[in-house]
Length: 434
Image (cartoon, rainbow, N blue to C red; front, side, top):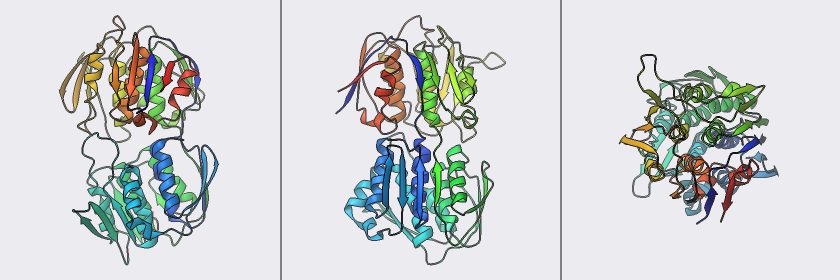
């Protein structure tokens, strides 16, 4: 098991460029299955989850040209559907939740798709009903083998239709959207997710020849086309990594510039960090965070305690709540963190409490943080990363703590963050991998 050893309490300084967005990469890489022509994608993050998806497509028969570390050309002219029935496919696909999004393209292009129960972070229930109900609305037949935990969708003829999604699922919307672009007729998806990454997927599909209206809204209209063609697509910077760097700068009283941050795509994220008392400035497309000795959490107008909660876009992404929670531990003031979407994502707070943080875990969804105002630094500790986002939150805590911390199970962090130790070392972080 790999570990990070972090000597905390050091100020960082310099410039850092965010990687390509993990969540967008998983969507747009699956979309290459919609055409037999070459699709070139740039700014791909070189991380475990994305590389595993690329390897999976290669095993399915997609020709992959790795032009450089962050650029790939995909040609899905000869997809081997028989591979989807093999134990090797079941093992590979079940280890990566994002690969569920191969189902929509396969259903649209070949009329059938198979998938095992997907894995991923252990952050609570993450149901798949939205995906399969959407496929059924388009005319597919769904079967679930409970003994083998294997999903099958098949269709001899699909047709566009109206559907109201039971939840604004990001991956569910992406999967249904990709199935609809090659489905004859008009498909209307209401209560669709509208995250920037879904907007990016839609723009990529349009570049391939798809007919999609309503991008950026929760009402998508798709008129099916006969085929899609080649295109080139560039992935956005990762907003979760950008938020992580903002929190890291605040916790360590560091002066950091985040380069090429696509600030117009960050939505409510900068405002929420400002409500935490963090000074951040836009300089062109960069974000400058000056060194702050202290930062104070805002209150609501009536003076009541601030609540930070996740919500579907344009609300606050749930992937950043772990970062907001750890940043609050060294703020002046108190905040209630309300994780509405996943019931196991706050369970890492016991590790922060061991480091000296003042946190009350109210229930699986809510935690109250009483800030230390940097009067009492967190203590170094032996920590274990339970998932990608909590792992980075613990890394931020360790960088701010007095003494040395060890973070175990960093394979979880590597799933979502490209060479994070090497990049932080260039800012002056004392971090070693062993």
